Image 1 (cartoon, rainbow, N blue to C red):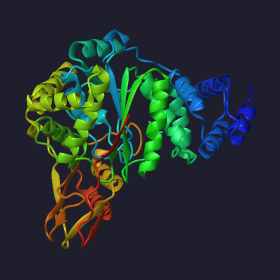
Image 2: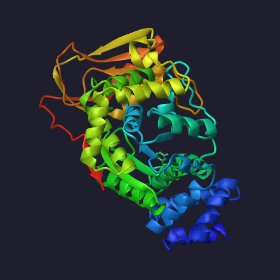
Image 3: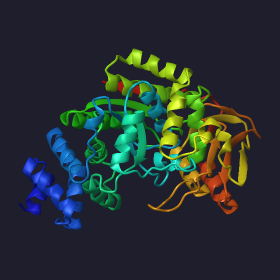
Image 4: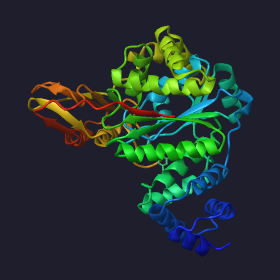
Length: 433
Ligand code: URA
């Protein structure tokens, strides 16, 4: 097989055979194909796209390029969720215990934050003692015992994706629907759950800036998942503004706990209930309305909160931080940003708010950099709110005072004000069948 033939066929849109795609993925994984040819292939896919058949074969080959989790010992109720990135997105911390409290099994691998988006693993590690690196035996044992376990991603999960993603990042080919779909779904397929719910974000804080592109991505990913024998669901949700009020690791854990206690922000609560309902619907096979009712009941009767405490304890964490989130160490410096004029907050650029939080110490620019778990932003006004001159727009939390001016500048550049009340935006655009 020759890479030049594969390049020609992809460039001309003539389609690749299964053998060609599998050969390509092997060469990407073992280093047999040089970076310049892989980069040229990525660019050809960027412009030419891929057929649904090619996408399914590519994703399957990428999923098989490294470790795969075998969750079959846990039965058929295993369910995973993937959010396509966002700011202030702490939904996993809420939906995982919620679904587990209702009978689903959430044995989940999550990622760390990078750039302006946060990661569940960093959030969980703000709970003292919490361990996100477990052996696969311990992961399976805790999942079987509690119906819930959340760990960091195995280093060798879909290595072909790791290589392709690194090259996409430096060849302006990240923004391609088949490449995003194969990247996300290869990791989800390798992670082993029987059912998968995709939270496809739309708006300024996400990859997909409009609803049509988000729908296309969701349709491609669900088709790939079904071709691999998984039960798939997708919810299109708004990421034009951060979700909830907290951005930053410990601040987000505390907010997730408030949601489980029924006292969280309305937008975050609504998105969590929609995702959890869809996960339960797929995992245990009850209809959507019944699943949504069951999830609401698990929030109201405290069973979801107890499940979160159970998981935290099982993974070595101190559950008293969940029972009393005020125990989280606060940042040394909390700076209030105030409105300098009256007006309606008509827009917030979610990615800039994520960047401001990262500057405060909550995020990392490069893999492996340490983060400050107590840093972040508490939003006091969100899109659609009226802000009178002098009212608090947000609190910036940091342990490094020198970072405040830059963070404040980025935060303020994320906001737009108007004299007229903005039209409310939907929070959940669509639940795709
Ligand atoms: N997340 C991924 O894992 N891959 C992409 O390509 C985009 C978002």
